[in-house]
Image: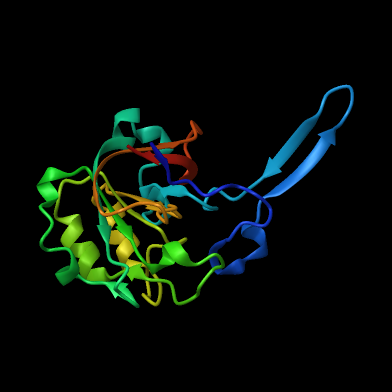
Length: 199
């Protein structure tokens, strides 16, 4: 198995280097027992976006069974791209064969947040939205940038295609895998941290 989850720590890479995205660990007891509180935004590190994130009255974590988070995945190596993933970069993939499409980009090799991260274009999202896949994943902390109105998110989420962001694909080669991306069992939220693996 390959763990493709970012490690949660105070020094971790976060979207746009926003301070409010950094997790905070607070020791609340050190004797007779040791206990720690964790304060963290649900869009930090490796996480899943549910439709409610972008769609008014959209589905949330409570609306999905556990089977929606596992399935056959194709990891697409697009590390040759410098800016964005276009439709022409994915039309050779037989989408009907897979439950998840996961993009390995140059983002996998950035230890710090790069504001010029490679993202999924609106046209590519529109193409994917016409398929029956369960989800799309990417190694960036966001799946889009420079797109007013967040069309990539909205095209996918409006078709019940969940979005995984912040995957660590640095040790993953292109190919077919079984994907497991389980969110925390939190009721009625728009996002969740995820422990994601490939095997």
